View 1 (cartoon, rainbow, N blue to C red):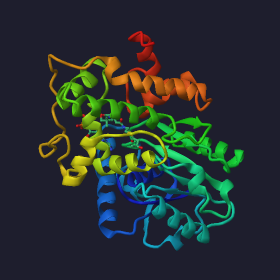
View 2 (cartoon, rainbow, N blue to C red):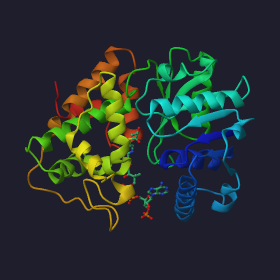
View 3 (cartoon, protein in one colour):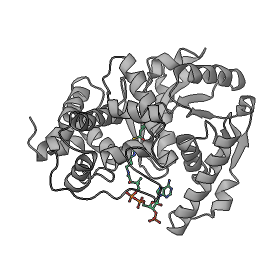
Length: 341
Ligand code: 3HC
């Protein structure tokens, strides 16, 4: 397939890498030369890592030949799928979709990797709305096994089914999101976890280290909760929280707002909740910790809401939280384990 990826940041470059690994011809666009350079550096580094670990059976150089940089949106012509992965700014995304639609065939599918904006609202930018869907990848796209496939009100069944097949073709697990709800499945749950963790710290009940100790050592998460906020980007989370709050979903964290104002944007600037200048922060086991239900209670309630509202099923939600976030157990498996009622 010929796939165009718009935006060469962490997500866009990771998505381009995944499609190239699975033999697709990839066009990668960014408006900023610096972002293209950084994106290509990330892809090369990641392919070298995968090669060292024998997780790819082709050389990085050979995979890279399938990624072509484009510097104008006119060059998306001929793509069968266009995936947008630019920052969470509604107007920016809409202007890109309008430009893309001018340059593609009637049959081209257009997808967004948005984390927080409604698919239906975004699709209104297009003349042919049935071609539009959400394909939501998780960071880092090359390692996380899940992609949420989201149906907007106008997405045709054919495009939705094709989205699921495309995700399978790049060896990821597709989770169908049947209703276009804010944050879809995984982020609705994750934003509750973020908000609970932030509240525990901002109210002075626990420290960042104590919350992350519970996340890593008691719950077995691959990263601490504040470590993950740094990893996914303080700026990204700030923009997401603004967008979802304006649409009535409460993802609220004064600690994030504060770091954002100071320019401590997480891993990318080597400073956020943690200092990343010497690499990944070391999270120590602390003697005092919040309980699993203090961290997960609201997220469990959210998972129940998703089931009651026919957005997803218990099995899908458990699978999605394991594959999308690398948790050893699904959110509703934790609920049973801790007898949360
Ligand atoms: N490509 C290739 N290799 C990579 C890589 C990448 N992009 N990123 C990390 N690696 C490598 C590391 O370099 C390391 O290699 P080494 O063994 O040679 O040193 C190896 O993978 C293992 O990495 P680490 O030792 O740092 O740590 P982990 O074993 O914890 O694995 C992880 C890293 C897969 C990122 C894991 O920590 C994880 O699953 N974290 C949770 C991530 C998560 O929750 N993502 C979803 C966020 S939410 C989201 O994206 C939605 C959005 O809308 C906000």
